[in-house]
Amino acid sequence: MKVEQEATTDLRVVGDLTVLRSKIMDDAEADYSWRIDAELAGLDATRPVTLTFTEYMRYHRDDVSYPSPWSVRMAIDTLDGRHIGNCMYYDIKTEKSQCEFGIMIGDREYWGRGYGTDAVKSALKHIFTATQIERVYLHTLTGNLRAQRSFAKAGFSIVREVKRDGYEFVLMEIRQKDWAASHPEPQPAIDDEALESTISSTSVSKAASAQHQTEAGPLPGAWRPATKQSESP
Ligand SMILES: CC(C)(COP(=O)(O)OP(=O)(O)OC[C@H]1O[C@@H](n2cnc3c(N)ncnc32)[C@H](O)[C@@H]1OP(=O)(O)O)[C@@H](O)C(=O)NCCC(=O)NCCS
Image 1 (tube, protein in one colour):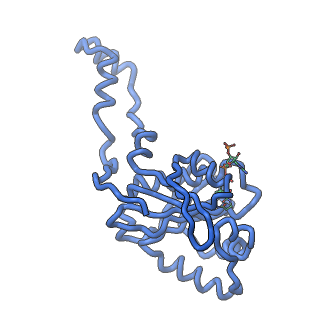
Image 2: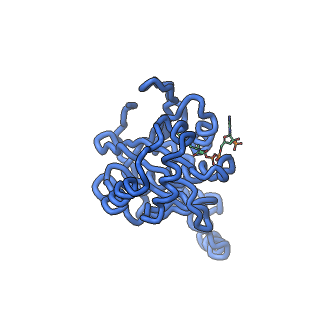
Image 3: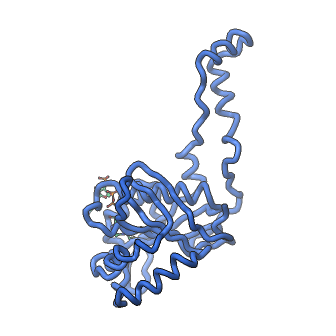
């Protein structure tokens, strides 16, 4: 799948604490309650929406009915199906193989308990294995230390501080090659009996055999990054 050319409508990524899934009409009520919340808007350097719920529903219906190939919105559920927030990757630039990322756990009950970091990790896994995107960046307010810590735990590094529209942000990024280096492809399980019989019949050492498994490369169908390097915005 290339998100640059096709809208994503049936996404599902299961993590340790959360499930990322495509947005649905039933998300509207929770989304609206989070979008009119002044504290949540402040953490995102935006203003709370002033639309009525009926007006908001029009936008939501369009978002769900006509997903864009240039921005992918995902709901964050707990493993038992409670909708606790949203995240998205957007401003997808095919020529630079990069996109921006944003997240909001709207349900405060789930702040500081690892849910956000788990969702960010799942989003990165999806982006770096199912799309051609090689660089994901984000802006978070300099004072939002919980967010910065969470993004760092998921693998993001600080690039620099950025001033924009009267706000001070920290620009953070992660590149596919660095993500892939810390997420090696799982190797096929080695059947001990078969291995022993191979060793005795060929006199190949167990160490050399394991080495061969490692050098065999990724499993068939694994995504390979292009070599192009993108630039910071
Ligand atoms: C930012 C957000 C996604 C993080 O998700 P989360 O589930 O709350 O975060 P986690 O529990 O996974 O990790 C938070 C980390 O920050 C740490 N932390 C919390 N408050 C902190 C503070 N004031 N200063 C420094 N570190 C802090 C926690 O101790 C934890 O680190 P640890 O695991 O090493 O102890 C979530 O809190 C959220 O959506 N908040 C509201 C909206 C928002 O801020 N969005 C980001 C906009 S860029």
